[in-house]
Amino acid sequence: MNKLESNSPLISVIIPAYNAEKYIASTLESVLTQTYTNIEVIVVDDGSSDDTQVILAGYSNKVIIIKTENLGVSHARNTGIEAAQGSWIAFIDSDDIWHPTKLYEQYTTLGNCKWSHCDSVYIGENQSGTVKRSDYSHIPTINVFDELIVENFITTSSVLIEKALLSEFGKFDENLLCLEDWKLWVEIARTNPLAYCDKALLEYRVYSGSTSRKARYVLPLHIALINNIFSQAPAKAHYKTLKTKAKTKSYTICSYIAEEANDFSFAMTCSYRAWLLKPTNIQAIKRLIACTLNFLRFSNNQALKK
Image (cartoon, rainbow, N blue to C red; front, side, top):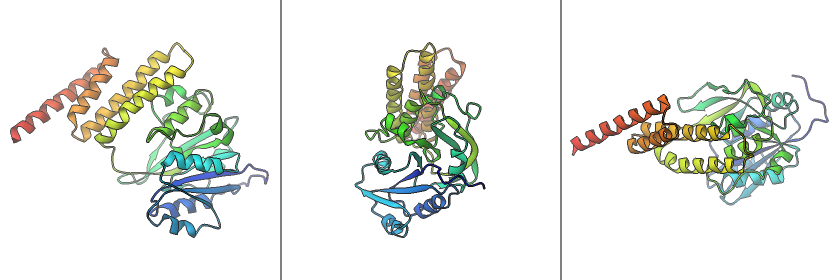
């Protein structure tokens, strides 16, 4: 591995941690063994009640440790950004792992871009070694807003970004309990090309599938954010179609999540709303029919059990 020159910029690595005793040591080791060595590591303990602090104490001479109240991951990341001395910021969650060359590979492939992401390998339940390749590798350095508004293909633990760019867009929205990363990336992507490093340099830990209860909470928030993003965006001819596409995708995904959880009523509602947006779309019609039949079948089975 070629070493970067000694004048390479300082990269601040920010790790939000909440009750992270199980994996935080592995995460830190993957960061501290990066081949790009001009880094500072900032761990923001978001009010952990387990032994996270005990483990972090063993790294106190290698990392900056900030302890806060339990105010959420956005506050933790923003706290890290404010404390960062580097001109570049990289994020990693407290249960993910970086390949040793992650920062080097990304920094040396930035080109003229001010931010970058890379591919991931999924680890965790039933996901060992599953490679998550970007669906958008064919657009490495152009405006990815149109793709990102429809699907969040950026994993936060893969992001390397110029600190000034983060400051320009107001950091992570602390009022959101979810989708805060997607909202920020969409806002940045509207005017800033995204570099893509075509290597799986991140091991991203996934857990058991999304629940219908979570989908019921996330869906209206997601739709509201889509509406708000387009209300603030400069008018473009294709934005009306793009907005419909984004909302349709959101409803459709939630219909599948609900169906897997046997929440057939919510699945049917979601598929119906997706169909309303595209009433002549064959796939939307098929999805609505399938969800309706599943709902009727489930309701009939429940009635027979009584």
